[in-house]
Image (cartoon, rainbow, N blue to C red; front, side):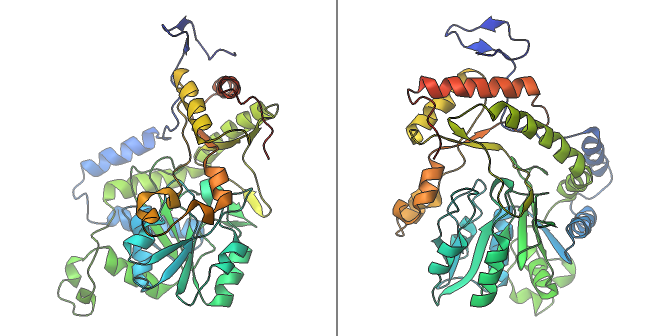
Amino acid sequence: MTMPPDNSAEDDEGSELGDYIPLIDPDISEAEVAVVSRILTSGSLGDGRMTEGFEQAFAAWLGRAHAVAVSSGTIATLMVLKAYGIGPGDEVLCSPFGWHQVQHAIALAGAEPVFVDIDYWQHTINPVKAEAKITPRTKAILAGNVNGHPAHWDELRALATDKGLILIEDSTEAIGSSYKGKLVGSFGDCAVFDFSEPGVLVTGEGGMIVTDDRNLAHQLRYLRRREMEHRNTVVITRTIPFQAGMSNLTAALGLVQLKRLPEILAKRREVVGHYEAAMASFEGIKPPYKGPGADDVHPMVYAVHLGTRFTASGRKAVLEDLATHDVEASDYGQALYTQQYYQERGASRADCPVCQKTVDRVLALPLHHKVTADEVQFIVDTLKDATVNTGAGAAIYL
């Protein structure tokens, strides 16, 4: 096995001891440290001045008319559903697959999530299967750019327009990716972002809603929290707020991260290049796929898919093997239909066979600015050995 850099000792079990390689390590520079220090010593932490600046900068960067900063991507999605009047008795089409799982917002709104199977290659919602799930109760489609890969936006836009549905773009796992010359976040009637780990732009927690609909933006601001000047306004106080605002601290981090985003993405792109080179001779694994129309794909983690001989238990053994060599890896979330809440309401693995085939074999590897070329080679060599250690060998991915 290729040794990691500066590796010179073994533990009692014989596994190599090198620098621990975490799955996630936020790209924080002196600029972020300085701005947080300035906010901490300059007065109110919640007066909204930095938040408004972050909203304006984010909307301008994306080319959308309005941006509303909130506390998380899940809250962002819940607020969007509430603003559109979607609730009990309504259905929203969504994928059961993803890391941030903002689809929970559908249930939180009192509506029914209708799980649609995913595309076999890029793992985003399948538009053809989505159309087959539409009923008179369907009000919206929540479609995600999974792990940075844009969804089938031309087909989804056409479907939503034809059926009179609201199209909500989930970009909580994607920032900086583009589809046919446009950044993700540009395609839905509105789009939601999340700034928690393992995202690319991170502020600890936080989210953003973007839209070109002025009325929707106003409703979202009233839902976000009750401002002082609105406390005695009859029309506005008919709405119960979520108290889901973003602090000046969070917004200040977001502003600096947004300014540094090209630099952050460039460093991560270099690490992806190291993975692509190291994976070239690995026949038993499927590297990330780049589908038609996807100009740039900026993943949160480097996600690969084990061969057909692997099961969920086999993947678990691989993860444990990587952990013994100080490499943090993970699965890519639990499919929503396998979670007890949804199973108690009739969800079944049989409804999404492609998703099930994917979710049992997907493996998230470290991707951040501190991962070196030597560490990537060590990770890949360790992964190769781990697949053999499970007894599955190097099965070709099909």
